[in-house]
Image (tube, rainbow, N blue to C red):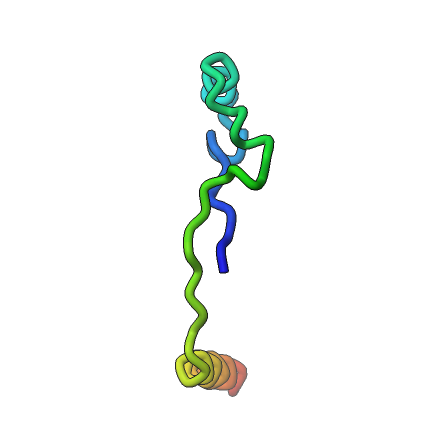
Length: 66
C-alpha cells in the first residue's frame, strides 16, 4: 500500500516557496497524482494492533474512573 507524500511548500501555505516552484517548473509533477512521490505503509500485525487497542482502552477507563 502506498500513500502520497506531503505536498510541497507546507501544503502550499508558503507563498514564496510556491512561486519559486512555479517559476522553475518543479511544481508540474504535483498536478498529476500518478507522478507524486510515495512512501510504503506497513500494516500492523493483528497482535500488535490488539495490544495498542487494549492499552488505549485501559488508559481511557483509568481516566474515566472517579
